Image (cartoon, rainbow, N blue to C red; front, side):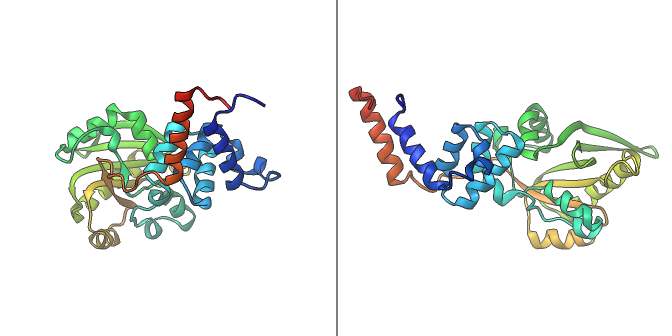
Length: 272
């Protein structure tokens, strides 16, 4: 066979080393992925279990290569289902685990291209303006219902920042935004919104209980734990990040050597 670049041959060898059993590869999630996705896994992950974890997520959700790269760079495996919540105490056991899967901690909102001085209304507007990226970060299954959703409670007006419906779990998800550090009163406000939505919008025997997710600029996890213990509605609290973390490592020696060799081949016109 002809036409393979030097870099591609190196990737093929790395692929064979990473998944050495040729008889099982077709049953493995990585066997369902395009070659470009396999390269992302090889370049960005060293641990075999993490490669398998992201390969399975990619195959299940049908991510694009850019989405896969984003999920790896923002360490989805550490953030998924990680937000402190009171779901275990406020939902039935069969449901609390599912509800917890809807959360992340922190949420990676770097795509909004705003700084820490942004106001709550501006942050909310940016999330709606970039709704596709917002939905990607929230996770699969979220459907956008509305922004500043009006609640009329016996003549008193209240407005939910963002309201979603999860089409797989069949439940409403209320999201409130705070550009400040978590305050226990925030959990009470969100719990109130969850209770109203659950009573006014949820269809009994068809929809699962409504849950709330509070996104804050910072939090003291001990304060969050005490606040959630006194909240009767199912609520999770998560931090959001608006800026990329600084790169902590240079490319390894093998990566530099491959890049140098590829550039040398191009400059000399070698093809073999």
